[in-house]
Length: 424
Image 1 (cartoon, rainbow, N blue to C red):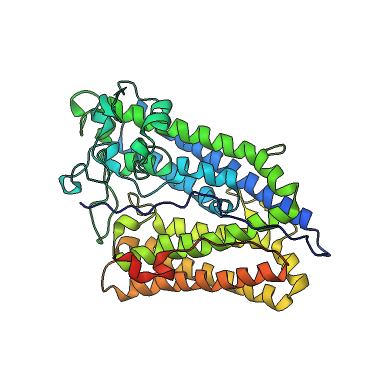
Image 2: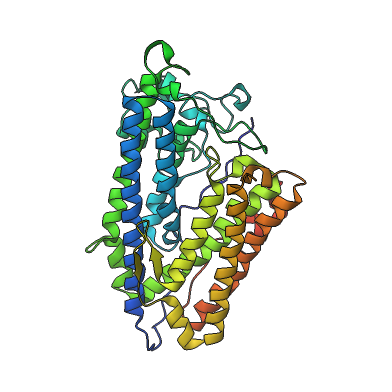
């Protein structure tokens, strides 16, 4: 099939000159400390759940069965919950933005990694490695250089395959590479159903399906180990003494800039635009964020929750404990109580719309189906969330002004700002 790449927005949002902070009764330093504490908790939880995924993958490789494959899938789904809530830290935090493509890049040309259905097609003019299938190809040539891939390692994935030949859709690492290796392709189009990779793709001997089961297991193992290592790095950046923590806590003005940039950019250009409105405009399930597992409804929900977390200064961890403290809401309420009340209500309304979308998908109305042309119910569910995200972004912009901050620019999206360009 024809592959269409929507380039991920990995570059840090440009910030203008930081104005001196006005006086607040609530201390901006305490607010950015809460922000850093929540980031530290989210990345620590992402690491913990990734280690649980790592153990489940090891069990699958040791004993391939329907049960061990299902356990690995369940662990992957659980790992997405804290990670998606961390995406609000991307924009405005250069350390996160520069790193994020290693762990959450999408969409990917999955034929780079493993076998695909014949309908997928072969190499394209844009990407000659779109159907490389490195699992079945132990040696190949990249940019005129012979590559020995007889042993699949984290270094091979991160150093050679990831964005091979400078092509962003050559995604070889991260959550979505692991997702593909657990679920396989979703060939249902806008019909119900996720990928259906058989557990025998990890079997040994004559029961192996898909060929190269040992190399597929090696790739899954290496990709999962790499994900854990990448999350270990980011968790350390937000822990006490970490560089990301220092960047926002040593200069509270810069910290507030990062907070609002992340909230506005994720709400508007990234989630409302690239992840939701665009797929609906194209009626294309390939635009799903978690397309192999049909988990996109949960990704959208937890992205939205992450934005709300930052504004309210509160995050509920998987174990039920809460990390909270002085918040942006406290600061805005001092300057403009009506704006604070409006933004909190808008965040709640967005979460209600996302919860309705999530409930529908959990009830059997798959996000794939919502994207289908002419599906009025699906369009209404998606657009309610899109409209909520757009509305809250306008109030986030007002909060920037209320706090006397300058130079913040939110990420945009053609699907929202220039719809005609989507079809050009």
